[in-house]
Each structure stands twice: as C-alpha cells, then as structure tokens.
Length: 341
Image 1 (cartoon, rainbow, N blue to C red):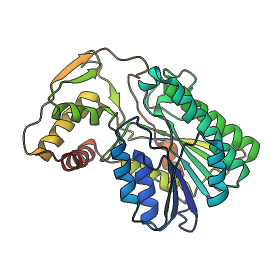
Image 2: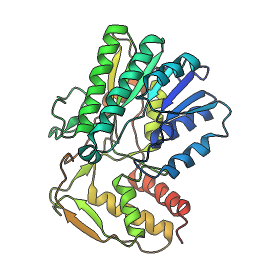
Image 3: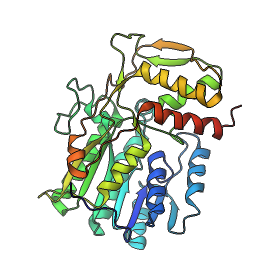
C-alpha cells in the first residue's frame, strides 16, 4: 500500500472550520504543524456557543488563521484564495440536515450549491493541488442493494439535502474534466462523537433525557425491520481525510468519490441501548430513555451501509471504532461539558 503521507509544508484551507468535522480536522492538521486557514459563517442552525468553543480550542495554534465569512460570498472567497494561496482545500462548509431541508430549502441552495460553485471557481483560478469535499451517504437515497458501493446508481435522492450533495459530485467532476482540478468527494456515513452536532439523533436523545422528555424514534416501533445506520466515529473520518489529502486521483479526469463509513451497520435500537449504557457509565446511575415510536419522516432513508473497499485500496484504511467505544467518549464529554451531576 503506497500513498503519500501528509505534507506539512503546504497551506490547508478548511471551510466549515467551526463545524464538527471541520474542527477536528483543523486540530489534527495544526497538531501536525500545518498552516490552516479556517472559514465559517457561524450560522445558528444549532447552538453557536458550541461552534465558538470549538474555535477557542484552535486559537492557541500559531499557524491557524480564522476568517468569519460565508462561502456563498464569491468576492470574499476569491480574496481569501488570492491572499492565502491554499495548496489543498477541504470543503466541509454546508447546510446539513435532511429534515431541515424540507422547511428551509433556500439555505441549502445558497450554501451547498452557490457556495460550492464559488469554491470550484476559486480552485480554477488559483492553482490548487487537491480539492477534497464533503458529500454524503444520503446520495444513495433508498438504495436497497447493500453494502452501498461508489459505483451504485445514485440518481434518486429522497431529500433536497441529498440532491445538493449529488450536485456537488457532478459539479466537481465537470471542473476536474474541464480544468484538471484534482478533486475527491467523500460520502460520510452518520458521523458522531464528542463536540458533535446537536441536531444529530444521538445528541438529541441525550438532551431529551436530561430535560426529562421522551425520545422520538422514527421506525414505527418495527423491531423486525429496524432502521440500520453505519455510525462512524469522528476520529475515523478525520484519519481517512488526512490520508487522502496528499493523494489526489491521477486519472484522466482527476475526480474520485469514496465512502467513509464504518462498514458495519448497527440497528438503531442497538445504538440507543449502547448510548444508554455509555450515559449510565458516565453519570454512575442507570439511564433508560422513555421511547415514543413514530413513522419514518419524509426524506429519511431506511438504512445506510458503506462498502469501504475503494477507500482501503487507495489509502490502506477503514474506520474501525466500535459504537461502544465511540459513544462512551461522547457520553463522558457531554456529562463534563454540560456539568451534569
């Protein structure tokens, strides 16, 4: 397995640097001694305090430069590239969330389409070594064939969020074809961990428990056909990204797409049980959620399951953190961060 390790002499631009994955990736690159330019609009889609707390942890690094701004502002992005001349661009800025896209479609077009277009244009006019960008497992829609492989048909998205991510892959391919921009899209599968996104189910369940409220589970209470999810711990995601950064595609059209998932789907109810156990350990008392079962929501997909063969072939890595280990780290952080007990 031969792949180039991280080049610490290069300048890395991380969009969405105050976000969950953006923060962890920036931190890892800075710890390795890289120069990191971070940009984030710090929107209020979820608690901005969490975003500022992440940024606070990046501040001590001398090689970190933060710009508060929106990737949908083309002039700002062009100036940023002109001034800082990034060698490698990691676009993690996006409006996330499947259900939110049904009520607020405008922000998805602004951030995920217009914003990504601006990043592509900036890469076109400022020679970059590699553009790595976030796609999503949601592009697979309600694909029945498992595990999901990168070569699967993905033209039936079931949410606007998924449609914007599929669009990103098409746009990146076009720019790679026309302007030879080396680009790599990453289809993330349900990323979780400490300092994660409060809109994600595991975080929401934990909030509800400590607020004394029941949790809603969208599977009709159908345990026979329970939802499966490929839950991927954030450190595994960051490791995969880091290994890919200096290994752009060398094909005629230098664009590639990889799944990054745990390759080991868990029943949603198994995951919830593991979360209860992790919180019980963290609080030193028995934690049991009050569960209410509801029908699947529009845009939700029944199951996700990543094939990680292509990723392994390229960089010799596949995620491996168990949900027990990952959720325990989340629970310990949550109890400490929110001052439980």
